[in-house]
Length: 203
Image 1: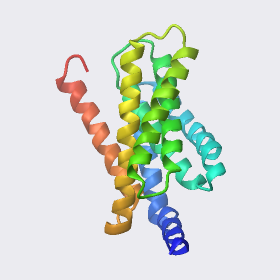
Image 2 (image 1 turned 30 degrees about the horizontal axis):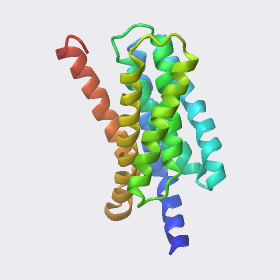
Image 3 (image 1 turned 120 degrees about the vertical axis):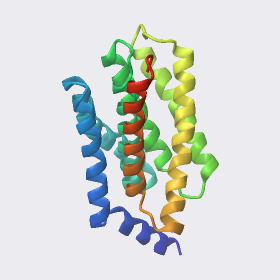
Image 4 (image 1 turned 135 degrees about the vertical axis):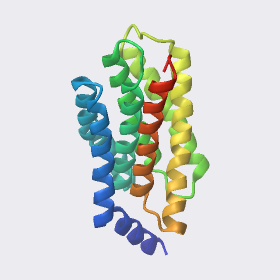
């Protein structure tokens, strides 16, 4: 059964459709980041090797390198989307910190086997808080409220861990690839960012 599950996961993860949706997701994010200028776009491009490094670092030890790299990339892309659309100043430090946190959270939560929802959420939350605290200590002085931002990173990690497990459930029972769900969520995030910037003055 374990072998069958592993083969099914591998087949879903590296099919032609999976490659298409993964490429489309990343391309969609990079195209949107271009509207904010060159700097956010460069951070988006830098997310790819950073996610690969994070996934390899955490995934190799537990034999889940592919899952770790994939979720690290998704986490990093979500983070760079949020940071790029922020109206706060000092974008370089904010984007660098959040992209790093997103990649590390995705890699750590991604190595948790499917079905372990609470452990996946706990891993994401703890990693988010610890990673943000470490990055904010390096980026000194941090331009925002550290306690609030650390709390946000922890909550975001918990929610991302839950999202990962939801994608596993959809992949197993509904036969909807995680790549399709990730692409749809990217679209929703971009639309939310655009509408927020349009209708919310302090966005």
